[in-house]
Length: 181
Image (cartoon, rainbow, N blue to C red):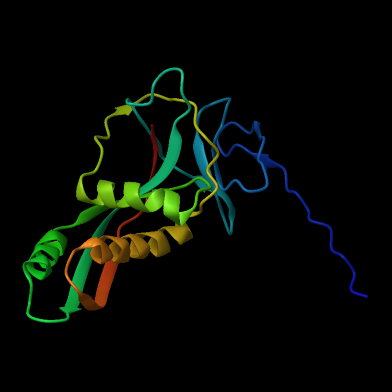
C-alpha cells in the first residue's frame, strides 16, 4: 500500500521577538503573547499582520476575528418583466465602494449570511482600541473573495423582484484584520 507521510508540525516563532507561537492546526494568523505583534502564515513562512481591535468588544468577552476590505462591484442585473425599482436600487447601491466584512473564524454560510448582508448595507462602527483577547483566526485571506462574491449574490437574491441573471465584477482591496464583538 501507499506510505503514510506523517504531518510535520513546524514550530513557529514570533517574527519580532522570537517567542514561540502556540499554533493550533486550523489557525492561519496570531498575535504574539509576548510582544503583541500580529503575524500570518504565508507560503514564505510568517509575515506581519496588522490587527485592529474594536472598542465595542466588552472587557469580559472574547472578540471575533473578521477580514475587512473595501470592494467595488460593477453589476449587470437582468430581471423578468420590466426594469424594476429594485433594479435601480441595486445599481444605485453598488455605485459606491462597499465594505465587505468576512468572518475569519469557523462558521457556516447560513449563520453568517444575514449578518454579512446587514453589514454590507450598514457597516458597524470600527473605532480601534489597544488589544483584546479573541477567538482563533482560521480563515486565510485567499478565501475572502469567495465569501465577498457570495454576499453580493445573497444580497441581490433578497431583493423582491424576479431576478433572472446577475453578473458582476468585484474588485477587492487588501483585507485588514479586525477583532469585532
